[in-house]
Image (cartoon, rainbow, N blue to C red; front, side, top):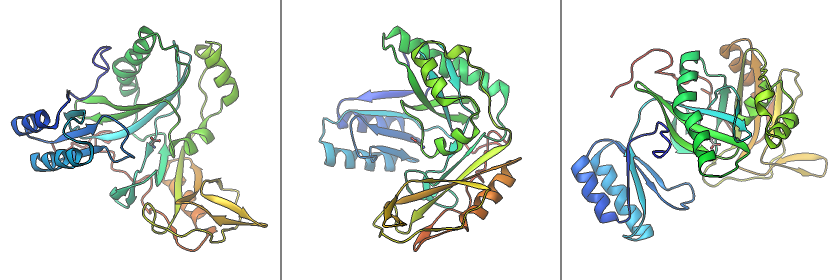
Length: 315
Ligand code: GLY
């Protein structure tokens, strides 16, 4: 990111926990510590204070030894947005901006999950922000991919935080997001297979994006207990309604019945002329699906959007 001028949080890398401790003591302040390696989703620590950061380093040292490689970066405050596109290595076809809700509990509290819901597009989004993201994050990334000789064709997922100082890249993925995809695909009017083919044929720039009007909301129905221990095998009853689409996730067939078979069981997705209507329709759809231990968040789509709504964020 530094090499290609992609706007991201200022960071330092460390090869030894002792150096990282010295840095944290000298630097202080809110920091994010990222372990370099596979950590089963538990390698990132968002530390509001020096003491939390030192405790995180102790934990990493216990788990991975004193020679653990780390990134320590400035903690940024703002709204996290997912910007996902299809690239042919030169141009990119961007899907509407979306947001997911990662935490289990209302108000973005509790443990992280695979995603409890999502919505698109993002209210308050505007052309200037889109242009800034394209010039400071997306274009430099594509230039970097080409300059590194990667010949990458496919999906790029930009995890971006919109701060009072502008947009910063938090992460890349080379896949679609979940649960973002469940709201993005119903919004997409272009033919998905043609877009994929255009990536391969280096013709993505010829496709004009077309999206449905209005907003889409996805409420995830989970098994009670998830992301901890939970029971499965409960029959799922669905009363059909034309207003929502259901995307099955942790579901299996048992004879002629559907039964729960995972932590996140299914997605209820609805469209509305505005976000409020989409939320109301999705939650009406939630009532049409029944299974024992059904759990869902009640505030999907209700994120504050502090920056985008023009409200200031505490430093
Ligand atoms: N929704 C976050 C992700 O797919 O990584």
